[in-house]
Image 1 (cartoon, rainbow, N blue to C red):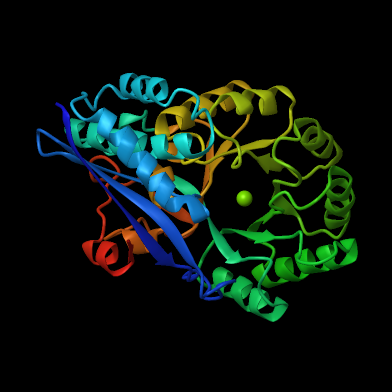
Image 2: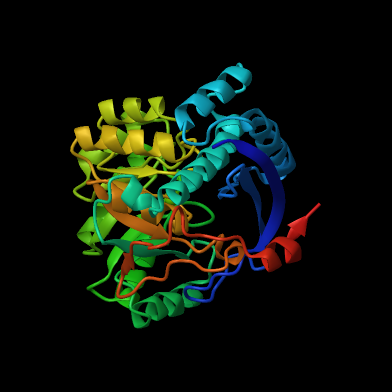
Length: 366
Ligand SMILES: [Mg+2]
């Protein structure tokens, strides 16, 4: 089989929040680069990439240029194609736009591989389980008004979610008492049985994380994990926080490629390893990072795109839960829907996803 065609585009998807109904910024849009790789056997692979911000057109251009280098190559040889693209990009990697563009191509190649084998991706990758836990994410953001956040939290419980994530590191000056109160109120609203994660998005200093983290523990909030408590590459600072708190510390979504995870793991910075399929560079490196975490006796969780990550977290033995953040859902005809807090493994070959032609037209950006 040979790659014969590369097609890309950009869509600006609405920033709505379908899980509980309160968007932090309803007028914003999320720019997404989509990729369709064609082959001489008629099998097509789909990929996406994002986080380009104001450079989204540059990111698309990078996908186009790297994709052109994949034409004529055998899509089963994912590592050979990655090696060719890496060599061609010279010093444009190993992080940033190169890696984000590579991710889209890697995902599309795995989609083709799954379709060629007639297997859903998770099964091709080892097929660890039939279903996987998933948590509602993006519905309890720090920018919501408190009363909105509490209504949203109650809605998540009523809708049958078993796990959800809130955010601290509230806007403005950090006041520990205010942070703890927010956590306490959200816990009250979601009820005692909900696994409650909390994302700081790197907004605290290590000493603030230890202080506030301990106060949240003393208030009996019972967090399932505390995420990205400080700068993502402050491995020693993260390790200090992880050692000081009983609450598990999660991190990794901001790291690019594989090697930074080695540093994070060797420093014992986190208790739960979060892997993002865009910043990691696609499915191939995602699995390598999951394997490293397994060797360190640590679970892995995903960041964003549950419609793709369900295959990965569900395939590996140390997969813990899938972040259910419906940011790209407008782009697809159909997406996996959780039942009682669980996602069933998809049954269609490859990713089991198809671009919505209507969305590609309606949200297209020139
Ligand atoms: Mg996060």
